[in-house]
Length: 611
Ligand code: ATP
Ligand code: MG
Image (cartoon, rainbow, N blue to C red):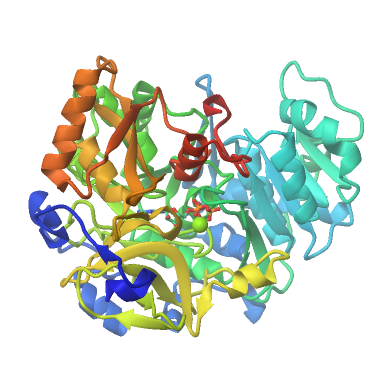
């Protein structure tokens, strides 16, 4: 079967004990089944899948009063007011220098209404494009939800972008309104203004020490005096709501279009995959500039009526553990890159904190190495629950559920309502579904869930190429085991072909990460006249370890023992740090381009301090 995936000679190999043994190497983490768990948390996964329907899930939401449709902001905010949640904190904001601001659902309703009224006052219409550019501040959330109330299409931008990626996105998204802060405006937008003729209104959140800039609107003057009442106009569930750019890990970022109906997925997955219960304090560490920061940093916690912690601080272990302790966070959603940084500092650093409120920890964005899952168990007394999704899917598709045993290294199982498959392309170019367990192929999802993208902005052809009949092709390679758990292999673009074998970089990186000296690993295929490609690894070391020939030999030996000679890297280079996207993903294509002295391609999403 593998031969059909990529031409005649190729077969897939993996660690000598075989992939099926991966789960045994890291014993599964067995969960006590909690009888008090609400049905949405699926004590019985199989039954939940059988009985689930998206029409039924729609019943978790209210819809606009009077049957006037479905609007994300109504579900996130207005429907809780009045009601038992009205005076609960919706947002608890923690500023960089220790400031705190809390917004109850009632406050948030009034604040988002004021913003929607402000937009209407400016003549902004339904369907107009509103961009938001700021760090994690309450105004960003208010602007995003307020603009959704006014039926604008909202696009969050990452605040650390330079002028070039900002200009590109504002131009292709035809931004009419931009909401930003005074310092970001001065540094990044003012120099671009002349090249953005469509950008009519820039609303600026004032900051201490920043003078008001000509040609901008002061948030306080524009918004604060508005009426706290606003009636959301009728909203068709298919009306455009969000434009999200992908991370640009594999190339030029794509603008994925999402509609109001996506809120059904956000709400369901918040319950199923993130285990949100009514009284939870939830913390999503993702930046609002990426899809996770919107779907789960803003929408899912609010539609589920929980309290959402919004922390301005970037990663710093002491600050983060302090937040978990002091806010009594019960559900925490973070990313492998942060987890690896915590691992670097050791489990000891967690010990001094009272994390007794913490019940559920989840991770997304990159493959979560099995070592990291097990480390979570050691350091926090509970595993990280990996889950998988993409900008395009709008919400979590595959997850390790609260009620499910965790197999370290597996992404988990598809959510109710999500049909997943492993597909392979036959030599004639058509696709076939692979039913055998532990066979690699492209991960495909049957289109039709509410938060599926409705297109790539201005890129009809690129969008069309994502489909084979009813199946959406994700561009990721994976396999499914006999129990239905999915295992990530690598991105289709990153797979290494060596001496007729296909090797996924993730397995090699995970093996290297088991070595006590390794903090991070990135693995690529390096062209080779004999083998086609050889496996080459780039390794960043933990504090206290220095690059040396002896360590290199030790790492090569470790990898060979663990993976076998075919899969283990032939070359290892030490690097101070690995190039990452701003959303925290290792950019293997850049490691490769640099190795080969090729053009570096689109670097708009590269973390600038790593250039
Ligand atoms: P681009 O599409 O522009 O190359 P990107 O794919 O990194 O960028 P995102 O939509 O932010 O943009 O990321 C989705 C991708 O991240 C997935 O397709 C997958 O490759 C990776 N990913 C996300 N979660 C996981 C996970 N739990 N395990 C493995 N990979 C993951
Ligand atoms: Mg992608």
